[in-house]
Image 1 (cartoon, rainbow, N blue to C red):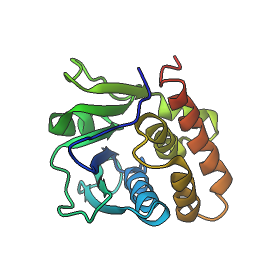
Image 2 (image 1 turned 180 degrees about the horizontal axis):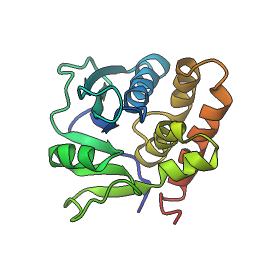
Image 3 (image 1 turned 90 degrees about the horizontal axis):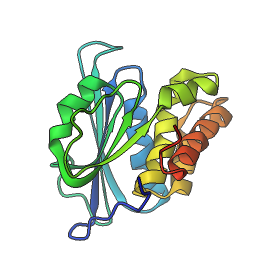
Length: 193
């Protein structure tokens, strides 16, 4: 798998959907990505969220549209990037991907079989990597670092700044370490098996 930048030549927007289940930090990951683009890169971004009726364990998604110009429609029409952290999220959203898009998925929880045609597959063992850091709850930040490395949709330094401005006080070091873990994994082409 190559780590070339995500390029959409006919458009200047990138549509991303972070998806999984409640408790995985999906919305926070989307929030940080949008904040990084809008505040720390000076671009435009929108964030829309959806939740299942359960507070934990139900379906959850955050859609981020990032654009160099004003965003004219805040909902992704066809995702350039799908981040799937659960099998149910993958099944719900994979059919809405743009050809040539990037599928980032938690390889221990998502089994994309058969793989979607014309989509770049980027697996990451985010839960295991987060567990090695001592806190499985930072799997979303591991994924965010991986997202930065494999898509180049948002500047990594802007993501680091948005991350530090968004996480609870006292957790900055752990979250930054989680981001760097995912970023390094993505720098290896995402094939660290």
